[in-house]
Length: 235
Image 1 (cartoon, one colour):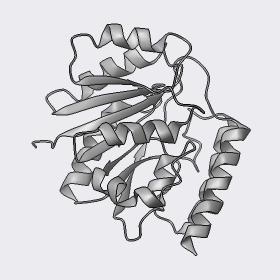
Image 2 (cartoon, one colour):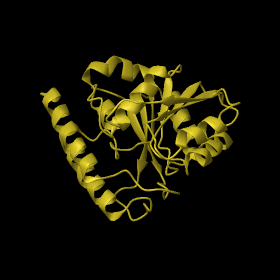
Image 3 (cartoon, helix red, strand yellow):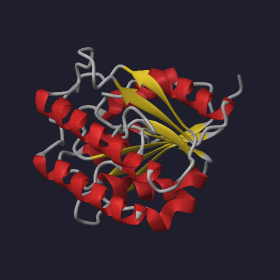
Image 4 (tube, helix red, strand yellow):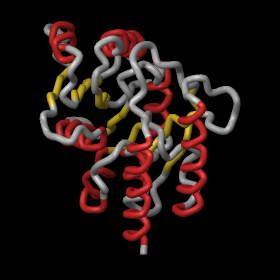
């Protein structure tokens, strides 16, 4: 199969110990495809940018955007990447190595062949097979997924996934309805328009290689505010 051109957006903050391994793994798993990678660094303080710049010197298909606006925000970082993407298909993944690049071609093939709007790399949140989440992250994710799907309809098993592919037109047509901040850009996108064609593929969510998770009570609260915002728009 000839794969269509696509863009991989990787928002990062302090992922010096993980990002180069991830880039090498992506290149290994997705070679012979037409793609670009846009890394959006949210003002890292650990030397991530220096590491990336050194690695991508001769790799024109990898671009680094240094986001200097505050507060730091994953959704805003993603949106900067979306705006700079030159392709119709955009894939979002974390920079910590918990999203396995082996799923990229599977997701791309599914969205292209089945003419879908979004394909979600869904974590197995309600099984014992997920090893990449702490007890707090798993429990909070389970509760929030149940709440989101009860309120907005069961569009996907994992509306808070950070690993998904979508058609850029979805973003362009939904800009005025997006919350545009927070850490769950997928939830923002899937609740921005009705009748989106969305399907899941189950993924094995890997353990973080190095560093610490960014999940916190603050991030959960931002998501709660986002849910209320989307609920008001719905009515």
